[in-house]
Amino acid sequence: EFFKDCGGITDIYWLTNKEDGRFKGCGFVTFESTEAAQKAVEKNGLELMGRPLKINFAKPRPGGDRQKGGRGGGSKGTKREPSQRPEGGTSTVFVGNLSFDIDDDKMRDFAKDCGEIYKIRWLTDRESGDFKGCGFIDFDCAESVDNFIKKNGEDLMGRTIRIDYATPRN
Image (tube, rainbow, N blue to C red; front, side):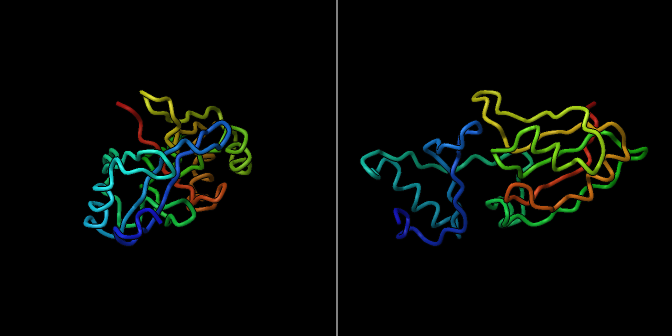
């Protein structure tokens, strides 16, 4: 309603606390055009429900350059094919587009038919400590990873999970 005079909105993503799911008081709004987004930014400082709003352009994420509509609100996400299997395999996968309510137990349950998980590392913002919605999972062997990769694009907690082979750090 607040942005109705700016232009069409294609997505709204509200940030929530990973622990209790409560609204953090901020989010991201994706508009149909740059012009619509610019009109929204011009509303910076205006009040909504008695509170002044901070409105600015989101900073592009590293590795951005996503296809239009790729940011999506979860289930809208489209399946992205994993990269080529590394020669000799790998025991680590990248998982992305995760619910902010994910935890180790839910991920282990999702992967239970693939093999044994050795370790889960959730990525967090260095400054705020907030979960980034992605991480790395170390499995017991490359065969378990190959089984888990087949689950790429499946629904996990209402979101289209992205699974890819992790490339080793050099």
